[in-house]
Amino acid sequence: MTETIFAQAADLNQGLAAIGYGLAAIGPGIGVGLIFAAVINGTARQPEASGKLQTIGYSTFVLTEVLALIGIVVYFMASLS
Image (cartoon, rainbow, N blue to C red; front, top):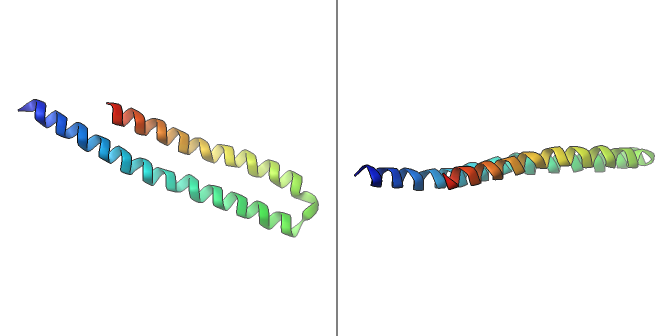
């Protein structure tokens, strides 16, 4: 009896992990859009600063994508347990 309860809890855990990762991926997706929108807007306003803006944009893009990578690692850890 207890084995079936644990099996059901493991199935529920995998489903919740998938939903959680899907929700966690929304944040970095919005963040990346805002980052590059700001880079495009800044380049339109000051074209001579485009190199500096792109450098800042790509470095913040990397930091934002790390959040998504951490989320997928947590998802796999939760789904495997």
